[in-house]
Each structure stands twice: as C-alpha cells, then as structure tokens.
Length: 127
Image (cartoon, rainbow, N blue to C red):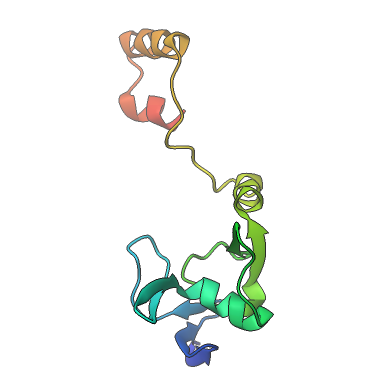
C-alpha cells in the first residue's frame, strides 16, 4: 500500500512498498523529478539529499541512488558521490550502457560476416 508524504524541502512524494518515495512533481523526461528553486530547475533527489546533509553537495559531486530508482527522493536511498563513483556503481550493478561506444574496423568486419550468415540485426544489437 502506498501513501503520500512530503520530503524536505517540501517535495511531494508517494511512499511505495519498496521503501522508495517517488517524486510526484514534474519530471525531466528521463525519470528524474525536477523542481524550480528561485527560477532554476533542480533535480528533486539532489534537493532531498542536500536537505538531509544540511548543505549543498560538494562541487563535482552528485546525488546517487542506492535503489537505482531515478524518481526516488527518499533521503535514506541517496548518497553523495562523484560522477565516477556513480558510474562505477552503475557498472557493478549491470545498469550502465555506453551509448557512445565506437566500433573498430575489426568489429565491423565481424558484424558483416554474421549478417551474411543470417544472424538477425536484433541478435547482433543484443550482443
């Protein structure tokens, strides 16, 4: 069963069975909640962590989720970490996808051979 709660600083959320508090305000289209503060868009989970810490995040740091739920603003599910630490955490959990990875000439040759052998595009993409 879920119910509505408010997370400091005045962030509306819905507590769900997993313990996550899902932000119910506007989002950015990628699953993260956003709130306007003094005319500037801020991530809701970052605001929740800063309220818990009683200070702004250190320069070069971000608000990371232990639960891996982008919309979660539960301060107990958030920690301060560098962008590298956040990426390593995602890699360890199998949640990191490198969209900008480049293919080598060797990769292209292998892909062409597999296509000629009848391997589907879907199967190649999954590999």
